[in-house]
Length: 230
Image (cartoon, rainbow, N blue to C red):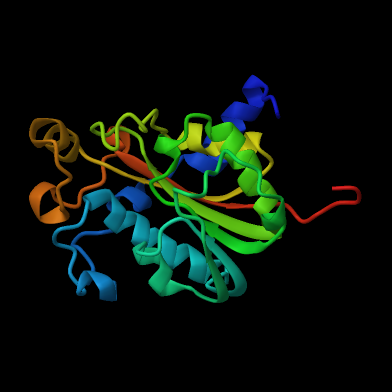
């Protein structure tokens, strides 16, 4: 597993993780909801997931990865799935699938693998990411979102949270390249989840994205193109 020098860590933060002011101020008002399964309405959906979906749409179009052959997913109802088109789709839902297990038959199978809101439920995320790396084809992509701070849920199968830098290092440590990283959160959202023990939508906590109050983050990563002997 890769180790990093202090200079490398600083470079990762400044070049891959740190967002500019435009990212945090780009929505002067909320855009229309494009999600069909959400009835084209942001209401009733966890606020950070709204912004993860918006980034997902932007990133997949930017990098031209919204169409392909083999898609792997862990949830069939993720809203992101409406914005990509793949010939074959494989559902690795838990149970019976456990990402801590190495399924040989899945090696180099997927062009794109999506496993949203999952890392916080992995007792050994490094082991799981090493397996996911094997499941993705060289040059293939992975997308996931994960809470940075959250209320306990699905206990006792709830172990951790990640900030954007930690998420980047998790993927880099297991061999992936970081393509894009996003984040969203604000003080009202964070106080709401602990006061009410529920996940508010944007109508309850607003859409302002406060850099230092990150509540969730997400990543688009890529398995590097194979080299000889890989």
